Amino acid sequence: MVSVPPVSSPPVESLYVEHHAWLCGWLNRRLHNSAEASDLAQDTFVRLLVAPASAAQGEHSPLREPRAYLATVARRVLINHLRRQSLEQSYLDALAVLPENLVPSPEEQVLLFEALQEIDAMLANLADKVRAVFVLSQIEGLTYAAIARELGIGERSVKRYMAQAMAECVLLAP
Image (cartoon, rainbow, N blue to C red; front, side, top):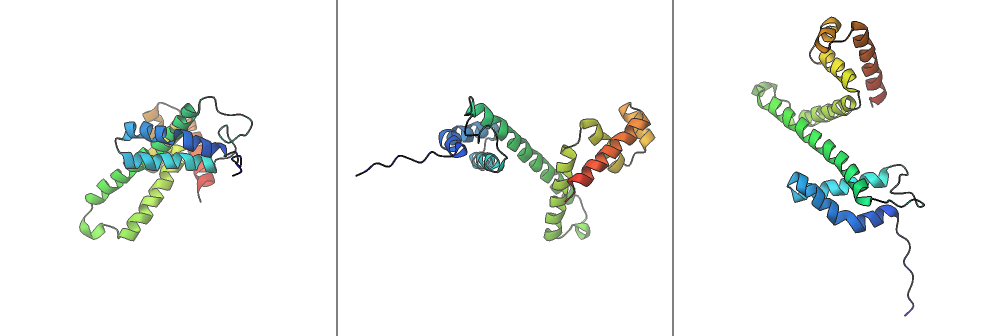
């Protein structure tokens, strides 16, 4: 019987084989839910697979600290997951207090929640002050003068931040 040398596995496959169990444990300690931890571990590796060339995928530069790298990527996946959960809970809480005749159909609820997720993603990409100005203006309905007083900045800054927010939202819109 002739032994065939194994084909070198892609770096993500190698990371998966060597560190998947560790990553599941790392996520489980934070979530206290092994099924969610397993799902987020998979999401982490999927993110590595679809990401542009990175240190984990470069053939010439192996990672010195693969677990630190995986933890960083998984932390971002976890934060997104927790943000989605919080958004979904807030949405469900808002639906629960609506009069029955105003509750949207299940199909409308799904569409509304998807729209909320898109808005949340757009807002997450904004700088803190830009996001604060946008939310105070568009959600709270404050005037630029009121926003300036609230945040302790000039009206000129409020206008500039709103322009940045609007430009960013236009760029990120589907």
